[in-house]
Image 1: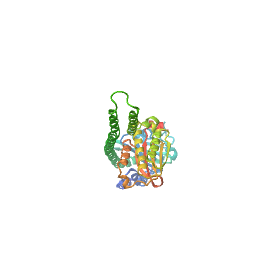
Image 2: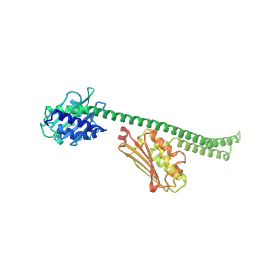
Image 3: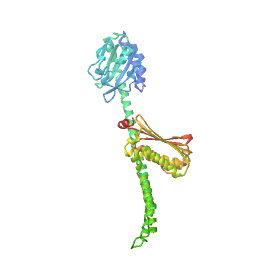
Image 4: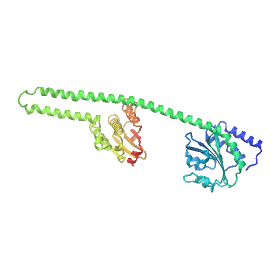
Length: 410
């Protein structure tokens, strides 16, 4: 205990008040006043514990000895050694030796720092605003029995001085957090609205493409076959040489229809799995292009992609298709690599090439890159474009997994 006259005590409290001015966060505030507090209340460890607005968690800001209390972003009040004070059950705590005091030691209690640092003599008083507890002011010394009842009174003066300031800091922090959450929500909403518009445009474009394929190719073939049929004899069996081109035309028409259907709905994805479908498309795209492109596919995902919801896996497949098509058609690549991987909490897909890279001219060709980014955003995945093999292009997709899918991936 320090002998302090009322005038000296008042002068120290005024100094503490001046030191608080301009401190805009909890940690800088407690650091700024710790030395001055030490003039009237000696301590080896000092902390201010602030309750979160939900009343279930608290955060400790400390000076002097650094403990695990100050390293926790927030901790449950139920596990606090001073939970009785924070819950309003007692109006102060004074102990000669916290290392042996049963009030600080209970099942599930986070009292280990007391023993780790030998915090024996301790004072705890509530910080109150409008009759409600908003936190606690605490001081500790390693020497047992160092505090007396008079020190509790000084601690109350300090707590009463700090309470309105720290209450204002908490309100400002909460307002800032709310503003950030609102801004993020608006950004997500705007992103989804823009993404939905882009996807609608892409779907409409796809619908028009399918319609044109059917009109220009399949319907034209069927019309031609119908005319062949009309020229066949009305009576008697038709000669084989007249039937043969019609049969061949029907087979070709069916083949074209299968190709159109496969492009509209990836049946390989459903029948044989994600990796096989990607491998099939990669091989076919290169073969049909007539280019000499080497390719590799590495699947380290443990079939995590096959555990996804169909809409999500199809969106990822479409992104991979677009990235492969871009690499084959525009990159002038000699090598393409596809990598599937699963990590704790997420899966990833990467399509890389050693081509000429993304140029302004390439980014204006069609809306393939926009479509990939839009599809990724609508399934809560992240799409990035980076430098690929030897300066080419790499399209990367990272998708966070739900807890149930994480178990499947593991």
